[in-house]
Amino acid sequence: MNPYNSMYPGTTWQDREQAMEAQIIRLTTEHDTIKSAFELLANTMQLPLSDPLQFNPAAIQQLPTPHSIHPTPESHPLIHFWTQKDWNKWLMSPEAQMSTCRRYGFLEDEKGELLSDSILKEICKIACGGWAELMSHNLALKSWGKIGTTGQQVFHNIMEISFPLFKFAVNG
Image 1 (tube, rainbow, N blue to C red):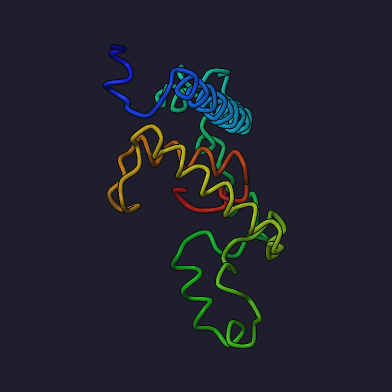
Image 2: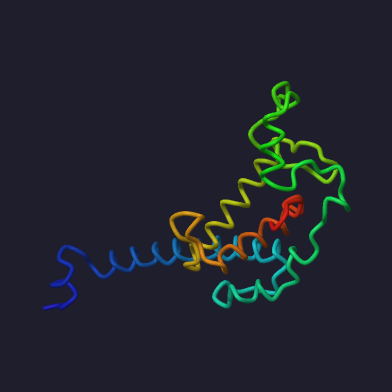
């Protein structure tokens, strides 16, 4: 009596082998996809990494941080909203009442101009990817308010490296 057949009744070695080959192909495809996504993210963040298994979140904190080269209101006078207080004050102004500015109006390029829809979509895509990266390394919690310092730093670095306009804010 074949012990394999007693564990998996109704299957043959050939059936099991074909199922395992299909699983190997699926896992190889998933691995290649994840590796490509990781390499893209590492390249975007300018990390000297090629293997996701060697990822060390602490390495991101050793990079030259975008916070160390933040612009200021004096260096970029065309930027209107450096703090949430600036944005809230503007929202109460007559100018804001007449504006067609959407809910992302506080995001400005270095000339103080609104962002295009395509840039806003790219920001959303990178933000989702950044959050997924935090989740994959157990750095993300269920809400932003509960995330740890390392997770915040990683996410801020991802966003500021990908979109330097996020440097146009007091204290990130």
